[in-house]
Image (cartoon, rainbow, N blue to C red; front, side):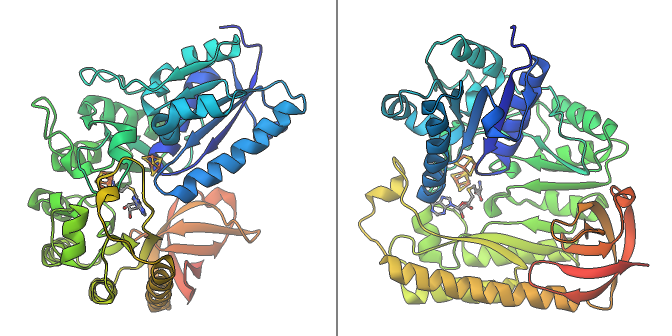
Length: 441
Ligand code: SAH
Ligand code: SF4
Ligand code: F3S
């Protein structure tokens, strides 16, 4: 395709899947002669990689889209593409509502992004929201050219076979497909060769990796395979489903020093009634059992979680159970949200709803308590010497770099960019809510 160094501007909304997919689009389009720009006014092509997990995410994307459409109306020669989960969910509607949008495609369009873009830039209007054939699903091998940092994502599966009643992801990402282990190991090697030290394995439910394919290892076995790649200093993974955390993964925490002492384990609610309504298929008791086993296997492990408040008929008592679970587990961080009704999800048929102001109050209470726990955690590190992997410059202070402990605490230390990629001991001097300050020893 003859693009004569056309410029592409990406805007990514949503989760690690979308960040990763944008990387794969970047890889393919730059190989095709595109140059990436971070100035939308200079772009020939704008690609929005969108998220529909909550209505707010959709609103954010629509307002962003409005700016690009405005510049196009005002004369900028621009091809506008919408990719990702909103595109998948509302493709036809987007095409009808926005005549100046040229291209709409879902997550399964990522492997074909060159052809899709090329057709759109030739002036066709393109809508592609077909799911791909599950056999031989074409996971993209090309490495994201911007992946030369310390940490990089590697996808191990696409889609999700769960049917959590609040969640739109199964309909935007389709049926779960595991990526062949050889491809995962190869991508890991490619990334390590570029200087990456921390591999983050990603999927919507990584623990179910390989279960549907006779030719795939289990998730735990995959962890051992990735750990064998020379140069992999740290391995993290996300997202885990508490129901599927098996004893073989616990064993991996005993065996593999590369596995970091941090796990993001979304619990969603502390109430068994609400968990049942969500169809999460575990109880509070089972969740606590998983936490105990993890701490048995890896005593210093720290946990973060996702919480939804105000779901279905959540009463004050149900919510209190979420509050007590927060303390009982001692999560060091949470992504917490008010329930947002999503089109086409089973929860829409539930006859209950929590008044928005009640949900807001609960969210505030949860977040306040979480902040206290996060602060206590970081303060608890004061005076300790911890190993940090230096990731890059601090976003706020010049002459300061930030690093992560194995438990994923962010520690800012005075230093320059020559330290990036090094694992170094640091003494923590002061803990805050979201990070701590320290100095290298
Ligand atoms: N696969 C992951 C979660 C992906 S979505 C898992 O099972 O844990 C990320 C988070 O968004 C979820 O954990 C949930 O807390 C939140 N979320 C999903 N749907 C939502 C909705 N309709 N309203 C509010 N939060 C939602
Ligand atoms: Fe959504 Fe549940 Fe699948 Fe996570 S496991 S992506 S919450 S359906
Ligand atoms: Fe959003 Fe799609 Fe991820 S809905 S959270 S971008 S899977």
